[in-house]
Amino acid sequence: MSTTVERLRPILTKQRRYATYFWWPDKRRKERGVAECLRESMELVGERPYGSPRNAEKDPPDCVAEDQSGRTIAIEVCELVSERAIRRNQKGRQVYRDWQPDKVIRETQTILKKKEEDVNHYHGGSYSEIVVIIYTDEPTISYETYASLLASHVFSGLQQVNKAFFLFSYDPRVGRCPFIRLRLPGDSENVDLGSVQ
Image (cartoon, rainbow, N blue to C red; front, top):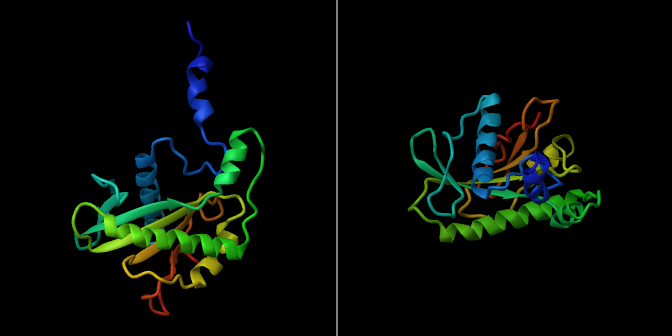
């Protein structure tokens, strides 16, 4: 007869040990969960960007939802995380990536550019809007430290992505997962920058 520990061992050995707030073993559930987390956080600050997200029938895009007018929007979800730190922590080392501001900006730009290129391969017809959500639970990328930097930078080279958000893991000081609306080339100078306080 197997014990509970023996039954859980295969699950526990696969569990990620670094930047785990948004981690879920099922990719589609994680993507939908991140999109839902952003929606809930936006509602807590009085915004209503889209209805309940659901996984797209065929990826890409990761998720779809309806905007206020009932039109279908595409949602792409991507994590900003150090794969090297993940691998080392999985091997039992306790390390973290010491992200620097210029590297966070560059990595965010790289992710947005990749998601811009993916738009050409979307399934399911045309979408009224393309939304990208970049999320992180990196210990050195905190909302308090990076909110102003990310909100003030204009991310270039995007024509098809309409909106992009940077979602941080839960912050007890604000009582939710804080987010930043990233500035894209078409945004006006007075763009609403999300939850920057």
